[in-house]
View (cartoon, each protein chain N blue to C red):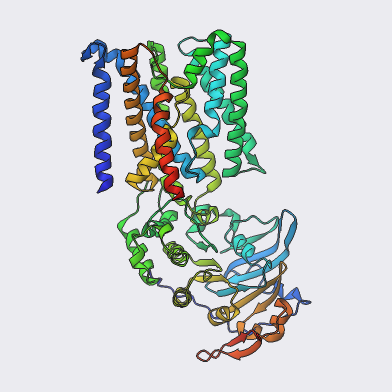
Length: 292
Length: 315
């Protein structure tokens, strides 16, 4: 699966690094930007007893690799679910590619936005290749069967993640990490323009973490936007061009990882003061927890 | 390979058993046009009832992600039971009166479950099961009340509620059945067209939606079509138990989990099983002079298979 029109748009402009008291940063990049992938306008969302987002405004550009980080309960997962239209906002709206998200039919949206949940379960024991093939659903009519090109695409996605040997195994007979890789492969065969991933590396060993992050970077170079919810700030800083920090339902920081991965900012939002350092290969900032 | 063999076995079994059902009678194995005309409608109803119940069972197990779901969980058979008991109480038992009452009861139960299951404009799978179970209990209670009120017809109601394809087909009734069967097969085709969405629904709801499945629409479609199909079956053949619960499991064991195969194979396997059960009953009736309802045989077959499946799942 290749794309002919690379749309990687690294951000050249340095971002500000607002404090908790200056959320006005949220109004950057707002509406009418025709290049925007997502434009979130005055978004409100509440769970039964808890208001999470109140007039949240932010935009994510096309082809951007954006990580979403924050302490537990900050609203990261809810944010990506709203972007995937898996939850409905109580007020405000989300524009995707110049059209309100609610105007898209489900299949139309699935051709453009893929979503990888934190965990997946399967009630029926499909094989891995059958599971990956389901990613072609948005392109097929109700009674249409999978074509040989769909099988090729599914196999190539498995190749890319180096799990071809699992193709004929039952999806419930492999490890949770392998299952997560199959779900990521399924999202690739959707040929989306944006992939939203909710902590996809949770169950993966180091080898597969590297595999997935490298693949996300490759996809991004091919023009696919990536929104990655992550707990590991170091990994997020290594791969993303932009970092959104959420805390208690508010977007409290928005900027380049180089500017945000600082001890004072981490302490402000996570309540721990880490040690600062640099990645020996890329030179990007990294943090380390002092444990003694 | 296994699935190709499975198709052949099912088709051969259905053809063989159907021939046997047409030829088998008190005079041994005979086939002439008069016998055919009298036995063919019963055979067609048996094939239709077994096939539809198993297909609906497979679709509902796929939709509700629950292997223990059977077509009666959505309450429409219970509604049909109320309709039949009411028709007997009122004495409206003409050739099409009883099926009409049964179908009206099923449609009423469908409306009730649909209304109860929708919360804030959405229908979840859990609310559907809960509403279905609640309406089933209410229906059973109403049937009890009607049975007490119409004591003379008690045996008839019980017999009907346990299923039978030994139906006297007048020309009018035959036309009504033929029309219902054609519409029902159309509805079954509609369910089949949702095979991939049902496949995808075996994963998280959120993942299914992100793959382009409109889960709300799918839930409503499968629920309404299933309830109507069960209503039609119960209206003509009563409530035959266990076919819809057990057959899809046997089929998945042979054909794998894809609904493109599971739905039509369940239809065939359900038909095979019910034709075989009906043959057993006819043999038993000839030997003893006692007509047993179909659920006796389907339950005797279904319970061991059901226990086997439960043990396998728990192992």
